[in-house]
Amino acid sequence: MNKCRICFNENELDKNYSIREMMQGKGDVFNYFLCSECGCLQIIDFPENLNLYYLDYYTNERTQNELSVLKKILWDLRYFVSNYKIYSLIEKIHYNSVLNWKRIARINKESKILDVGCGSGDILFEFRNHGFCNLTGIDPNLDENIKNDVIDLFRKSIFEVEGDFNFIMFNHSFEHIWEQHDTLEKTKNLLSKNGVILLRLPVINTAFYTYRENWVQIDAPRHFYIHSLESINLLCVQHGLQVFHKYFDSSEFQFIGSEQYKKGIALHADNSYLENPKNSIFTRKDIRKYKKQARQFNKEEKGDQVVLFIKRIGEN
Image (cartoon, rainbow, N blue to C red):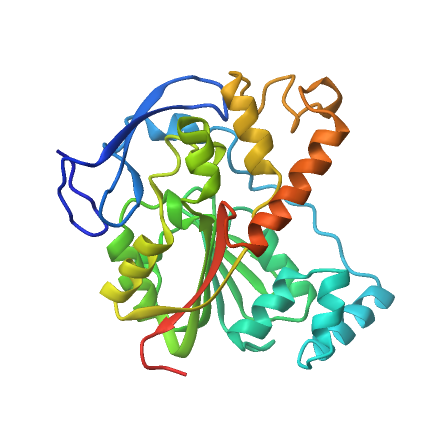
């Protein structure tokens, strides 16, 4: 019998799954269970030699592209317009995640922003290009600390961070963290008054129930937890937090990766769509169909990844 590390339920009705490592194509099998109470899929045991499954997963290298004067003017104008209702029309033409997050979280260029699991800092550089000037990233997998004008990247975990932040991001990093409760509690304590947490993560939904063990977003053994909406809401409430806004942003990847896994094709195989589209099993018609289906899933809140905005219970 497994004990859920999110809701602490113990139930013989929990469903067990054997999941292959398929991103690198090692094929090693890891055991997961789906909690029958909160619906969170989680790995049973902490993997041995976990670092072997992160080889070539991160990169500390990044080419910095400075904005031209014209582009900077256009980006500054778009930032200004994002404060007004008319911006929703622009979003339909060209979506911009940074400005959308800025609008929902009600942050500004002086806000203190922390990116947990920042990698090479790509998202923070996007914030910088929009004029944000107080940016910090942390990632225990960095080779060393890196400073780039207004951006500081540190080789550390969230438990080594002090201070207060207006906006704390987990952009596809929360599912990689073993200590879910301790991490969320620490994050709450790092928030300034009316601060906001962003969790962008895969979620148990239609793709999982379609593909089961072959669902690409399980990503064994790197993803320790794949939350359901119920389990993430429960986790938040347990720590005095609440989700106040959400939207789904899944893509055709949920179909492409999962269909390949069904046929034993690793994500980085020579005939994978991500590596060589022309040599893959998919036609252009297939890709168009998957893109259309992903958009529809997002509208119907059936997508396989979600963006959650979280604040302390009782704060505006």
